[in-house]
Image (cartoon, rainbow, N blue to C red):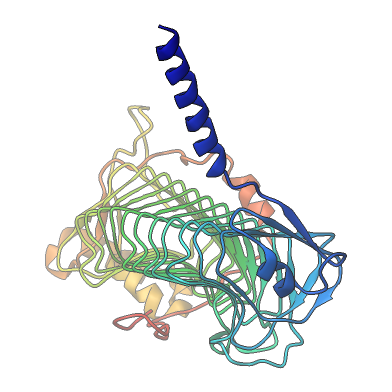
Length: 443
């Protein structure tokens, strides 16, 4: 028995020794005291170590091939260089608390401040500041990345198409882009073939496309604030995604674009004072509900076979034109609120007793010739309205709401209209100029 106990004790000692021999004890290396440059500290670091960069100005290019944390203390500044300022080539790297600042002389959009190599799985980039960067953060074919709470300012001194993207992701999977503030980018967040990704609580302004996706399936684009851009959300070639709770205000062309978007949930978005609030192109089988579409030059524009979408419980309020619809047959969007509905509710059930119809001949007349609104009260115009109702031969395909709501689904709409009163939608009539990178025309 004693012999067996001694054997067990010996085995336990060996197991404890084996475990301890494989533990990697992290240490903290300080740049600014012990080390003069960041690269010197990286050379001496091991996996799991923390490199603290003290306040100061550092002019160096950095390649990280170890699983380390690079942490700024006191907002140290790193000069943005050409090509890559920091290149991450190891999994499990964290970069936080640094300020990247450019002298503004590098005009090459291919220059990247932080490049995450495809081998750098699980990289975390958080709480950094980028000033006058071309492309801020870029990744190609990475996975499980987290980009959080960064402030990235691009080159506002250049034209929108001459800048880089603040966040550029291609082939990146399961990426979380959360709580970043981006401005003066080409595209604030550009994503191509980035499935199962999350883009939430970001703020983008003064850019071309604030969020621009291409072939991004099963994504989550929620609670972003996008204002004063050329386009707010531009969701393209996407399926099985949710676009919820975004605020798109004062964008110079369109608040939210769905281009070849299929089987997605588009709910609870606020689209105010854009030239167009919501635009569909070749998008089918989507659920569009509880959106506030207000004070846009054109509330909702459907084009290119955007049929078989379920559109209900939305509030269309004070858009100069509620809907422009191009298709071969009527579409039935029931139970929406239309601020220009002139019907009644005798049964007092909250639903209008006569259908709401848009895309009538009169709507088309107003769209093509806006000065004709001056004739709204003329007998001739009302005769045209009556003729269109009585003689279907002159009817055009239109949107019909058989049960229009008598009250908005957004009781706070007046408060929101006042809150964003500074934004006035730009006026476009007829066919709009085609936006770059968009298929088709008439945008």
